[in-house]
Image 1 (spheres, helix red, strand yellow):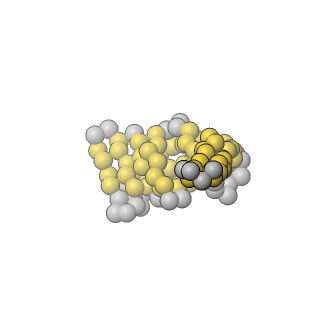
Image 2 (cartoon, rainbow, N blue to C red):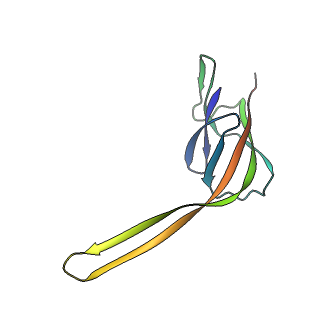
Image 3 (spheres, rainbow, N blue to C red):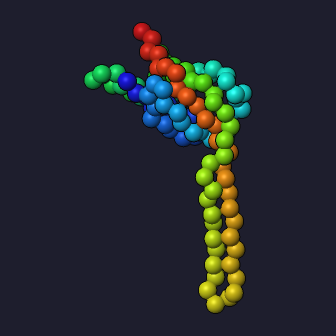
Length: 105
């Protein structure tokens, strides 16, 4: 069983016991949260698609902590001008562990 959920402005394909990194959210470490913006759920061969969200499906998750992502580098170079700059950035992320996908009737 898997589901496609929306957290922030991004979509994630999740299953039970998956650990995902999402953009920083204001949750405390160890907190149990319920994600109700479920776009699609698949169980066995049955697939339900929401328009835009499914009303009877919830995904529960546990917040593992706040972490930083990989460093990304932006480099700008102007030829023949002896001009260049470089900037680094590490995104702040929230780590979630998916506990269960609950389908209501």
